[in-house]
Amino acid sequence: MNKLDVKVTFAGNPVTILGNEIKAGDKAPDFTALNNKLEPVKLSDFDGKVKIIVVYPSIDTGVCAAQNRRFNVEANNLKDVVVLSVSVDLPFAQSRFCGAEGLDSIITLSDHKELDFGEKYGFVIEELRLLTRGTVIIDKDGIVKYIEHVPEITNDPDYEKALEVAKSLI
Image (cartoon, rainbow, N blue to C red; front, side, top):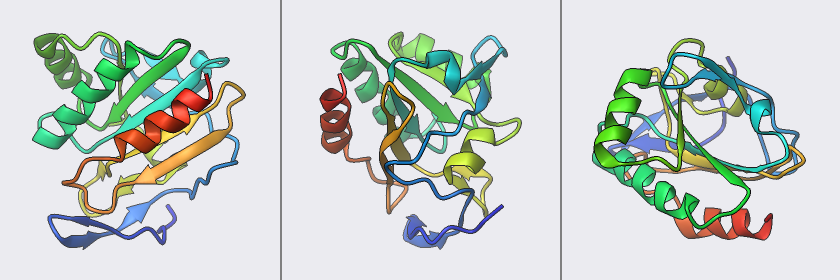
């Protein structure tokens, strides 16, 4: 895997981000991850829709939980948009969390098995084998329109910017 020139810290300590460098304007690479029923799901399953990909290290941390709650609320207000929530958590943990929280407007996907999303989009934390926090917005034609790697993993993503971009594509 490639080491990216992306400056990210975890609790103030620098971490190494691995994978392919994706930029706005690039064709979004297809990837496969597992849903809560352990079934493979591909990005291409959602062709023709605007896609918000919410990326985070673990559903069982405060910021990650808040990130998913926020995008679940926003998903209810966005027509023709699918919100994919991706981490390396096991599908069981993602399902438990969403069930307990009543999150039913996002689709959780686990990248734990192959790191297919993390490698293709440049979100793998080398030192931890987790995904770094961020957001990817893809238009209906499969073109990346926005990508954010949050500089400090313990901070929130830029919700307003991501939502502004997503709404402009509807």
